[in-house]
Image 1: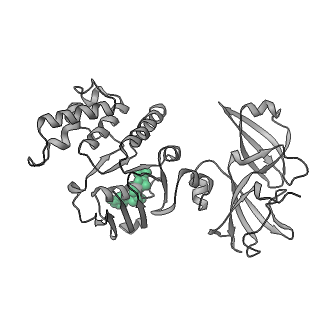
Image 2: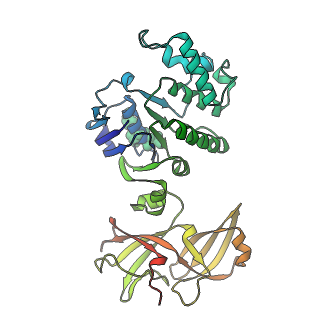
Image 3: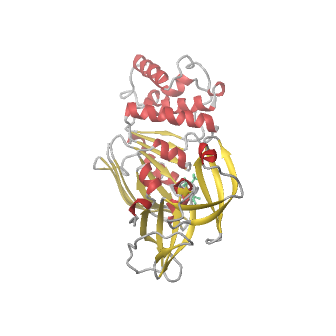
Length: 372
Ligand SMILES: Nc1ncnc2c1ncn2[C@@H]1O[C@H](COP(=O)(O)OP(=O)(O)OP(=O)(O)O)[C@@H](O)[C@H]1O
């Protein structure tokens, strides 16, 4: 099932909830819509489900007009954050619901329904719990029932709106892995809404980053993380250090750090740089350009240590992540002085008024540096 969305727009009382959203989803793909609250994710999902309509734009499913297809005929399965299970029905009855309410010509026989429900119970690992009511299940079990119910009608598009949003962190991670495995098995085209970047990066084949009704970037989790297209994506995905870079007579510089090269060939005098905490290298030899910094704090978080370093030449504190075992290997202690420099950075040029130019991006790597 191929889904193509063309320039979808949706306004609510003057508010632009979806602004020219275009996207193609390939058969069997697992796509995550990721963005902050109010970015338009749910609006887009509701349009796909047939619960809402865009003001303009088009959607094609295998080349046919999807928006003109009534919700009931879209072959879409949906799971919401808040368990929409029927409280007065057992697990089995909940799962069978979508099949039982079909017009009798399309309704499978009782035996067929029974067989399908049994298969789904096994698939969502709830064998033996079919006779329970939703109130007798944990949150994670309820969401698996909701998923089984969505799958029962054999949809060719699965829409999941923050399905794990109300669950505690451990259950979330376990269900996330389970869902990924289920997807590898079923290969059902899936659109998953989340504002949790870790969830999106771990689960999806492709991540669609949304902000204020627009798509900021579409890409694999690796591309979204390593080659963010806009300052918004840099700041929204993962932790990041941000600082100003200026063009000097000898090239680009920020304090003691000097990224070599200039993709803009002198067209700009200022830029903003983003560097991930794990992309900062400590103990840089004195022969290389780097920042002199003082280690202020060490926060040990299991296998990773988060460090805060003050860089006087930037008049800024930078965050650095290292493996915990590096603390003793490098003899790191609060108060010590270190030289540090980025391994990689993403820079966006700024115009003379200081406005960031989103489309003027430079992905800089240490390995690109010409060694003397
Ligand atoms: N029926 C409506 N009437 C008016 N405004 C609406 C309606 N539905 C959504 N909006 C607005 O459109 C914007 C986008 O909402 P949407 O629910 O799509 O965001 P979201 O990215 O899913 O956010 P969240 O993560 O909080 O669910 C929000 O500002 C919301 O207030």
